[in-house]
Length: 193
Image 1 (spheres, rainbow, N blue to C red):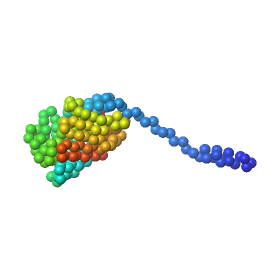
Image 2: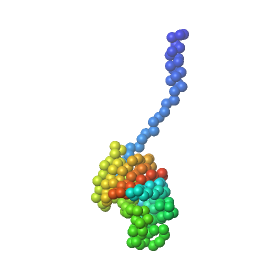
Image 3: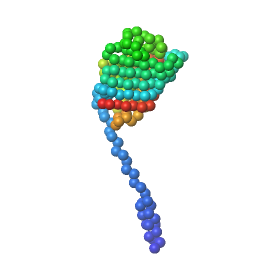
């Protein structure tokens, strides 16, 4: 009877153990497929935060970006203590706080923020891809996502990605140019392809 005790103990342990199945991971799409899909994504939005430093000056703001086709709507709440800015960029031009599009808006925006915001490119950079119409240099990480991008005089570092609908989109981005540095932390993504 004693010789059966170790065997029974072993069987009892095995019966009591739960097996856990590993969830199959969905392979991420290759770089070229992702770039094409993201560049042509009809609508997407993100909610997050931005912090900018320009020399010894700086500001922080909440950041909400809504993209629909060729139109962008950007909400910055709290920069420089001046309340909220709402930018609308469309084929008609750039508009600030609901006013009609005007060529003077870019200069007003630069005066308020302290540097020229690269809006034409930012729409792509937020998605982790370069603007396909502007020359660039790119380094990808081990997961075949952008790690470092140089484009239009800006240096963009992608510090972290977050899962989103079977893909990974940027969660932390650092943009720098001359003495301007902008950190963007994305809290939520929503993408329709």
